[in-house]
Image (cartoon, rainbow, N blue to C red; front, side):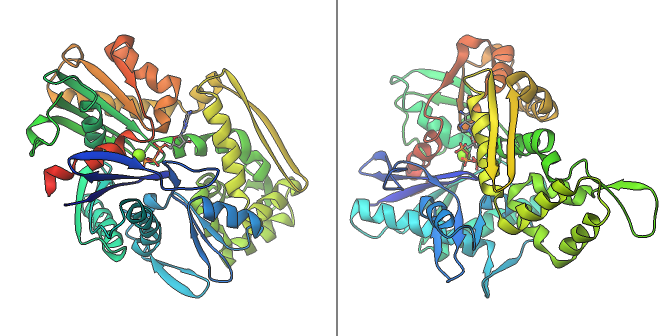
Length: 423
Ligand SMILES: Nc1ncnc2c1ncn2[C@@H]1O[C@H](COP(=O)(O)OP(=O)(O)OP(=O)(O)O)[C@@H](O)[C@H]1O
Ligand SMILES: [Mg+2]
């Protein structure tokens, strides 16, 4: 009996499915209180050389008072050719080594579930890791290498929005045909496909001719969080602070190279470089906002970016079902309480929404279909819950065509359903 795992290694969350005996099931990857189908795609390296993944990483990070190194949005680094290795407590890790840690843990959970070793896996990949073909290829190679190091021998890739389409297809009555626009809005990327599906067609081998169009961009949940950080929170960390550089009389603002980096929280550790620290120390000497500059030092040293961004993310998610929320964060003498309305969230993310809308229109245009020839819009991924994202589709296709289901597991389910296409 051939058993194949489907693994959705996501920017924010990862999940596992098992294909065996012609059926697919989504398997819990976490136990305990957070228990369930999703594992946060995060790592924590303790000072004592312990390495933790998922909820265990978060727990350990909190317990140890953030003395080690916490990493998230690792998938985002895959196409980055300048990221070769990183040194953590005296050991060098390639990006594939980091991902291997997460994949190993998921594999072990799955093997415990099925009761035997499993060497075959279908991995999801975004439509575009990068618009540069060389970087895109590098990203997939690295992901493949991570799976190999985790112990898989047969490794196949499926586009994430195609996987979501297969999951949707399984919900259709036999024989029912539809042309579907799939929108998968995650943490790192938004991925689209227009694809023909037919109920009861599970396991039809080659689906390439059903895919009418593909597209994607790296504007998704993380970008929205960064934008909130920039517009609503960064002033607490020196966005508007000014200083006088050595021997000069005029005021200058803190370099964007520092304040922008702060908005991509997975890059905050880069600010620990000695040169940057010295630069900040020098600015502190003459600044007109000493408090903000001290907070800037604190967020870099204490690494509380994770908790800060968690507050930001929470406020964003609340706006999906309410009109207003509060970004609330307290750390020592820092107390942030910023109100955020849905209207304001949409306004500050205007450029991000425009990019998404343009990409959607491109995908429709390349399919050669008019919007009224598309029967259903199937939205999945955590970010698809944002009302404005739904509105983008309602405007183009009509509200009645929208279907939302299983925001977090349709991709992984479809990866499992992809197994018969390969084995
Ligand atoms: N209710 C909500 N409203 C708005 N955003 C949400 C909501 N719930 C989750 N999110 C966002 O969804 C994202 C995570 O979604 P998901 O798990 O689908 O992403 P992923 O698969 O890890 O990422 P990717 O597919 O880009 O690799 C996060 O950015 C999270 O903040
Ligand atoms: Mg995803």
